[in-house]
Image 1 (cartoon, helix red, strand yellow):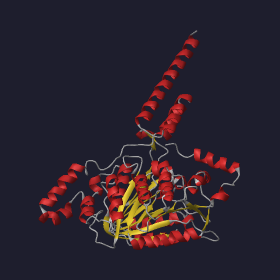
Image 2 (spheres, helix red, strand yellow):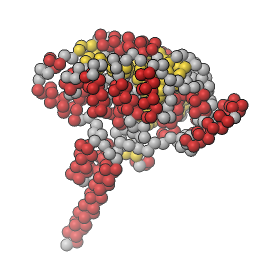
Image 3 (cartoon, rainbow, N blue to C red):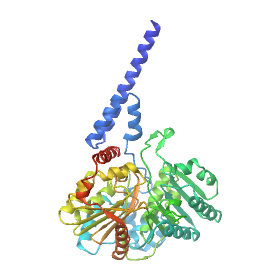
Image 4 (cartoon, rainbow, N blue to C red):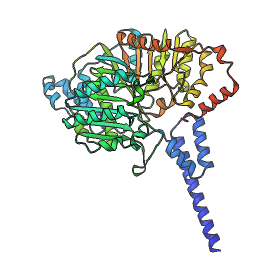
Length: 506
């Protein structure tokens, strides 16, 4: 009888726990609106799989987190007060520049805002103002495309060797190979010379380097700070294993920057009988470096809690002279209040296109509104071209993208599959006037889950150079023809649709 009573007590406790956790999942899911199918699915999983279902939701279903910025140091009120003070006391500006704790804001805004020359460009930029109020279009920049690691890595190493004060570097993947080790050795050498090194890596993307001890080898070197990005930490009550920091940024001495799609890996360089991953990276100078620096610092503060007073200083945000004619705007996004910025920027650019859209992406699984924007553009006569890999490094992602081909092709969109090696580049060109480059793929993970960094660029010379690179990739591709595509086997179609179901539920 006692055993039976105890058994019933345990069953009651488990039932209570199940109902409570289910109700918590329902409450959270209904408070944060998402696609109806995803909400219904998570509610079903939470009820059908006691304990396990709510744990899965905790790990994979929570895709929004509070933003952790420099709130005490850069509140809007303080910025407004500072701006008014500077405007009413211009004779004190030079003195303020040397001591301003908000040198980031000072340097960016003192550089002067820019405005596109054409009416089309101004209209797009004005639309972006509404979603990027804190990141203005800045003039006086230069940008150089770096295709393949054979070009990008030597340029990055040269900048590192010339560093005098600091080097800030973050990447999704640091590989535990000859390229990763060579880079870390060079950074360690600069640290021994007194240069401050801050390096940030995504723990998921750099799993093999973490397990292989690459970061552990360098963690106790003076002036060499390492931080692993993760949002799965039980001690901090963080369980979001599905969120990644996909940014790839390097800033040297606050004046030279690099960003783009390239990870730190030997797969990006030519080897014996092997072709490197095809990727686009970029070397940048000008006022926009302040934005790259700030993006890095914000992520660094999020993970390390380093006092903003130590890093929002003139030493890290120095005055920058004009270095070119490119006008650029930072477009960051992540599972915070900035969730929709890259997605909305792409959507607005596609919907305003008049003549041509060319997009390169390794993973073509965009959100429904992006698909509709592309189809609408093609149906109104815009020349829409998509360049994707013929052989994807993630089989299911390649299959999922192909499940959309029929819908895209029937609307007039042209799709080109580039021959191997795998193309990992991300770029968009609109009407030969506007470019969007950076880390975000045209897939739901980049547009909804990852922390990403892109640059919106107005510069004819750069756009022409980038278009030459992209058209070269198009020339190395085979075009998908609708009639032939529709003849593929039913089994293949089913596999593609199954892969599409495996993409993240949002």
